[in-house]
Image (cartoon, rainbow, N blue to C red; front, side, top):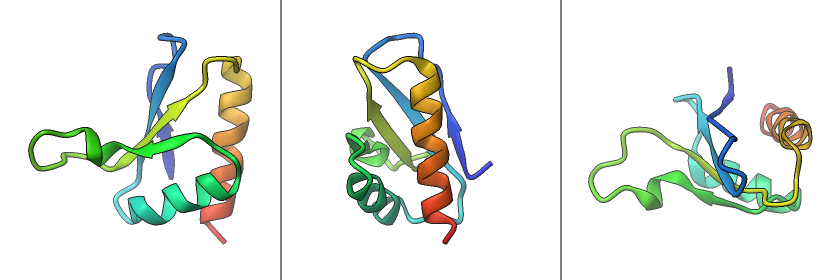
Length: 79
């Protein structure tokens, strides 16, 4: 898919991996415009990033709401 959500069982944050043809910085900008608390995954690597994505903060959201927000972001970046 466009965005693949990683494990969300940790209850504080999750990683959403981006498909290779998306520019991480642009997706982060879109997410912030939608009110999503995200950070670029690549800023967390200590060496060359292996994969682009988003680190999602969601301490008060159930998994269904997270998936809904990811779907909304995916629809936005496809426009």
